[in-house]
Length: 261
Length: 264
Image (cartoon, rainbow over all chains, first blue to last red):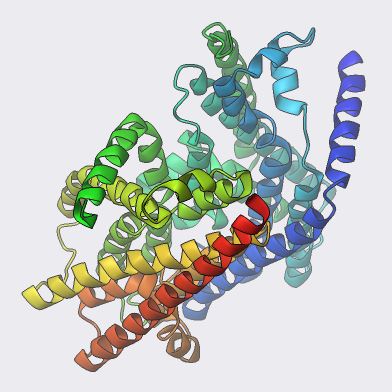
């Protein structure tokens, strides 16, 4: 309960701070629409030459693009300003302020800030998914929507856990301040359904860096193509990653030697 | 001190810094693998036969060399320039007896030396994995490749520098550069080789600067262009180089005046 109250205060503060920079809203909307258009033009080139992309039709791939935009918004609004900022805090010593608060450090480090404007991506992503459903003339059943929501939650949990794992490394190696960019390099592969990748690449994107669970499988869920086994594997992988990342974070914390005196 | 001596000193200093941050550079290198994602996509799509004359092997040849080109033409100067203009750190550099652009060029060159050293074994590895990749290797194409590669880097550097100078006046310089960068990913042959674009789009893209910032050297090595196309391309490339050089000089002169106006 106390944590929920704290969360409300955190977000209220962030919102007030962000309202100072209202022009950011416009430039964020512009850039979101721009990158979305870029992604759509990209897949249009493929569909100019082929009717299907790894068994997915154009509107179906559009759903994956929508999910890509959605999770990009999640990362930029929730992860980059929090977990992503930890490395900088470790380097200049301000991470001490996180540790000295009488609240769980992972809680503060993960949820202290929110960049409200970047939620534009989340909304635009959802809009693209709805539009694609309209193009397909598909009305998803309750069960499909339910599994879609579960997959969105597991995707969010996985992205968060991966960021936390990467950032924890910074407690030892301060000079890898750009490690979160590394995730984006893999994330780029999530613009397209994972079924187009072959062999080792697909295994890598499904189980090592689980991009498939983030952008492809939620779309499959909504299209009614996701079998229950995959759904439960997704939930399992997400829970496993959350536990592992929490353990690793706590282990890393013990190695923190402040940069300030 | 001659310019050469100055550069030797700048390079030595830059190399020292690079080696200190080598882990960070390797991570930056990994973030430049997007052409390989596109390769995976086109590789799968061309399974049932060639697309616009590109068979699977052609896509592999194209994208492997494009990845190398992208790594060796990589530019990040706007992040430093924008920061130093907004925080006023640039004034220290302005006191040095050398135009700041040379310091930035030196640090980029040091980065390229480091990258080449990492990339060469990887290139050999790639060739062992895909022994069928094929390039049009003659003394002429090799010379043209190296030449256009160097100009491609210059174009990326100068154009990004011009966007960076805009930070003297506006706070969205980096956002504008992001749009420019997206243009390069699209029309510079990353999303698809330009041959695969609808003909009217490709016809325009052939004259835009983006192609000369990335895919032109690769196109030369693939040997699909007619000699006339190559010569035309070289002329257009020189035109863009002259354009961005003049633009840089003009913007820099204006910007410095603006800077001292509010910095003094």
